[in-house]
Image 1 (cartoon, helix red, strand yellow):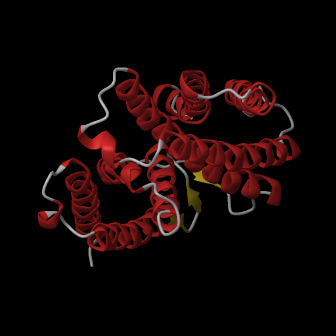
Image 2: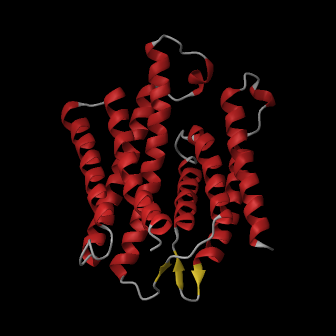
Length: 269
């Protein structure tokens, strides 16, 4: 089947999955809302088609095509898969309202703006592990950022004594915070590994045009390390935890995707 058609089908299923989860959260008559299993069935099929499109787009005879649109699409694919798997045992369905449409949008970007930025097939093992652990770290910390946004909305409603609406369907605040720090903890470990593998293959950050990426990634690492230390030592939670999480996520996204936008789209490397 044509990859263009597969992309459109995957996008449609992602949107259906997100809409189904949204209907379950916001509807008042739950008997009339889609079943949870149906929403995640849509998501799983969408992710399967997404993987097929990614392989076709990235696997070339000259090497792995790791251009900006492919990289963004791959990242959201990993996020979607992790969400689908994690939702089996954790109450994080609500994250899919944001993540599923986002995955569909990045797949549309990949389909609409093809380009070429090859990762040589002879790349070192350290570089390959750096790429894999970076993708996983970005994926989990993205889930943490979405969780932080949802936690912020929930906290704001409770502070204003408005516990009704969709807030009543969310897990308790303590559970939401515990899930947030679980995600941050796993993401932080993966970020440590990603930076370690990156420093192994890195010879000259300026010659390799990764100085900004490296510096921003280290700053993001410091932000998340400080947040985890503050949680352990001072019991940071609530608004403090949310602000640090969002700040670290923004810096991390600028480190990777910001540098790729500048190098590929503006400078043409």
